[in-house]
Every structure is written in structure tokens, then in C-alpha cells.
Image (cartoon, rainbow, N blue to C red; front, side):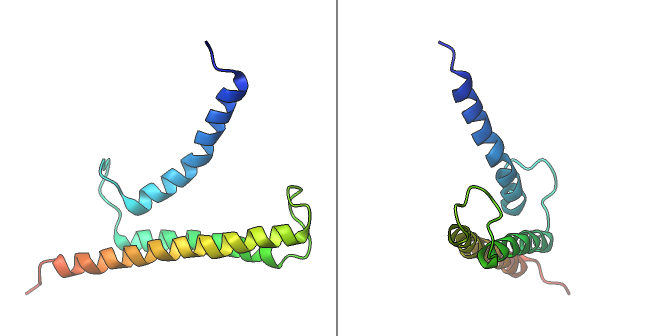
Length: 116
């Protein structure tokens, strides 16, 4: 039996909506199958901070806006709650990743051979 077009489009849209997130975190985590030289920790930190700033700014604007921006939100209170979750939870995940990156950087500095 062939899958229905609706099931195929749902599976396709689920994968295509997760691709940008996968590509974003691939650069931060730099997992095992390396196709190129690894990115330095400083570049990863800057990349993550810039992404966190735009996410936090959007969450803050959604939280503080008196009017609804999207028709999916029936009123401004629902939009504010969504913005607060985006701002708070997204910021916590970004901060955790940033702390892990800084810890990895400091750990790599301890293992680096001494000069002189």
C-alpha cells in the first residue's frame, strides 16, 4: 500500500522543519563525522550569542506587544505567554550551551602544550 498524500506531506514537513535546527546545532556541537576542520570555540560562542540575541529579542517583543501579531493567537495574553516561554526557555537552553562551550574551551586550554 502506498502512503496517503497527507501522511507523506506531514512526514516531509516535519523533517523540513527540523533541518534548520539540526544544521544550527551541528555547527555548535561539531559531532564525529567531520567533513572539514573543526570551528574554533570563539567562533562557536559568537555564533551562539548572535542566535540567542535574535531569539531573545523576538520573545521579548512578543511578550511586551499589546496587539496580536499572528492569527493563531486568539488574544494578546496567549501571544505574551508564547513569547515568555520562547524568551525564558530558549534563553535557558542557549545559556546552557554557551556555558558548555566556554567549559570546553577552558578545558582545551588546560590540555594545550605549554609555550617556552
